[in-house]
Length: 396
Image (cartoon, one colour):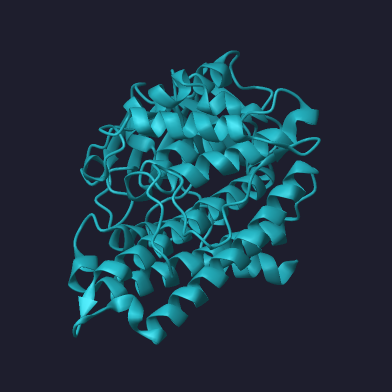
């Protein structure tokens, strides 16, 4: 493989297929947005530096505020239904660029902010007026709190967090964990059981909006292997409900529709993280010398990198087909699961192979392959485990 380009956020191996150019309706390339992303990353080198994202207090709020002020979120947001294809491909460009910044770490809170919490809020008629607009400007952020500790994890049939009525107030008690952006959120979208139908006419899971600073809400950062400082635990002790976003019996249905979008976008992120890691490994193989020769001189190394490149292209093609289906409004849940499952496999494989090619240096905290391997394990869990994806695929 030839030496790699080092353009900030846009590197790729010369001679290899270039990252796909997003196209708006009518086939117009979105080069203007690409330029905007490159300018954003070039102007904020300190904010996006990899070492700042290895701490337990990464600059999440600073990044979201800067991205919102720069118009990055609005550029990836549809103004109407006809604008959906353009906005989705801009979101792909956004997550592709951020997969190559700060060892890919800054892209995690950005995706959670835009394509998890804000996208979900926008589908809920009960969401407070102006909340989505403020989120797009980077002035506020929310976290989706679904999974729980105690071994149940994402088994949503075993919710222990529950909403009850205390005189004229709805309150929530329970615990959520492995919640992306929880330590930095202003609002929490909490899935809670409603055993007494206090939010509507039916029992079952309800989706509720809570203020993160309300009485009875306690948050802490989880010490995880990957996504350093980005995930948290939330404890709720009779915390007051701000808004019922979806009443009992409807919360899970809302989430199931939303997860189609989320899983495809997570697959975009994982695929582009894998691509960035493979590119870095190819570049490093030109400079690392073993037994008197550059590592890239070894045919087996070249073949392995070529195979990984082929896997990236294959997975990217599948994921981009998922984007096209989203743009048409008809991506099946099983296909979204295929995208996420294959992208998770790819990222783990690419990160592990790249770490091996890097030798002891790859084991160092802050190395792109080591970071990708850690984050890849977490991404495989986020939005549904591999086993849940296989179950969804099996159901069709």
